[in-house]
Image (cartoon, rainbow, N blue to C red; front, side):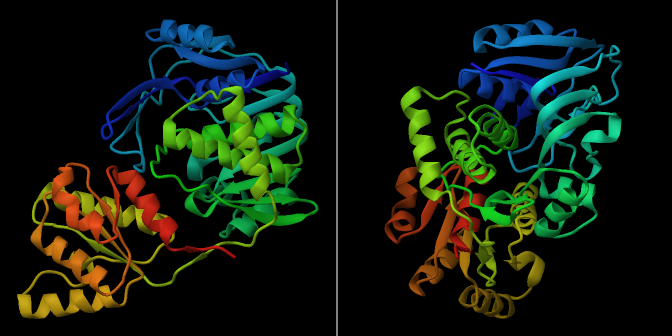
Length: 406
């Protein structure tokens, strides 16, 4: 077994829908994944006084060691849904001073409390913190060989560049030996001195997004730091591991499952171009006659825009008005769209009509039905619509349906 240092947060994560409360944070989740693959892991973290016992029990059960400073209060991430931006409770907390950490191999995450100085031979750094991300060396940390694994927003912040390709290249110029820029449903850019390529996400029917980036970084660290895989192979392995996590929320795989993941990743492990998104918009069908309905439409529209997809939303792009004016405009938009995403909760008559109209024209439909009885979906399913019972999963499915692989 290999010795790995993990530096990262230990936080409470709460999600309203689907309902979930877990004691995780990036550091704990990554330690669980890495220990589950047989590594000897020490997690360097900060624990709140109230929940320290919970995290100590998790470490004992999952098989990793804790080196923990203390803070006055707990830090909680609160999500409305897995695609939402979390509210963070307890950002301003008092924390004990921490000593510098030295390690041969380390996975380092950005932390709400501020991460300690790390000096490592080989380090995987996941900056966290979106557009407020800080470089690895910003606090005096150093690495002989540094792999940066960042989201697109983090890469933009660190590089000052807009596209994932340009951001990755700039971060290489700034001293990264390996740069991976994660782009959600599109996959990720992988950059080294030898060149730049893309890897793909592995589509799944169910998507639990919270923590998926932590799992990617942990799986990449295992493959690159421990198994000695090349950067591209390690990135494909991480992508396939994430698919396992988001579809099951598992943080440990049995030997047979791990070999299956490894084999499926290896079968895809080749350089790819950037995937193309169908330029035709998604038609967002759903009722908007009360606060809850309009909120869901707004959340879906925002999530699709954030994924880089064009969206036609009747309430935003046509508005309200007489039926003989609104209906023709909406139907024209359906004829010109690439896909209909239907919000079916409540079984609104107008939304069901839009679904039927689209299917009669051969236009694909993805339906989100979180609170709809199965017998009410007979014609929806029977006409070839893809139905997802979860908001996040439905958004991902709609976007994946628009991708054109090259």
